[in-house]
Image 1 (spheres, one colour):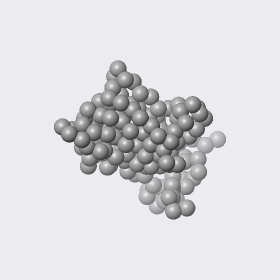
Image 2 (cartoon, one colour):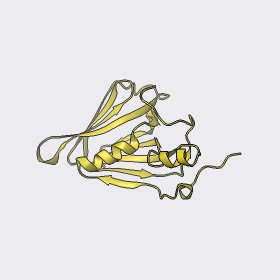
Image 3 (cartoon, helix red, strand yellow):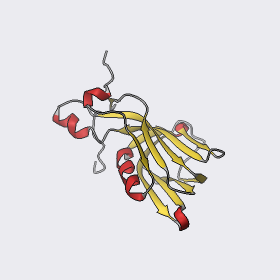
Image 4 (cartoon, helix red, strand yellow):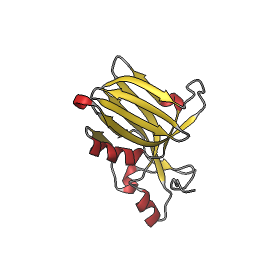
Length: 159
């Protein structure tokens, strides 16, 4: 029987980060690149004006340590939450197929007037989610202990 990794093993605490501008969002985007999640783990709460995803993100921040220490690379479940959401639109996603697993490639912000704009989640396979927001407010929070990445590999877009 194998035991899940612990944050202490990597000498790090769970991530809990926020983004209120494009520079901050770039940091979050780098951390969630190649995250995977079942389509059923997306939720939009219109009354709360919140869109959230429970995703399994690759621990990019730990990958160099894992290679150096010759230990497995890890993933961790995290919640990516976007506040101030007015509308949600998607493209290239069959929301009726509850078995589909999505892969997040990037998160960007397209500013409009007066701080409004769109948070764009680009997915593998030409899919995407576009969130119209009143203001940029995105958080990323790790909610489980890290676990060994099932593939055992670092995601590679050249393969």
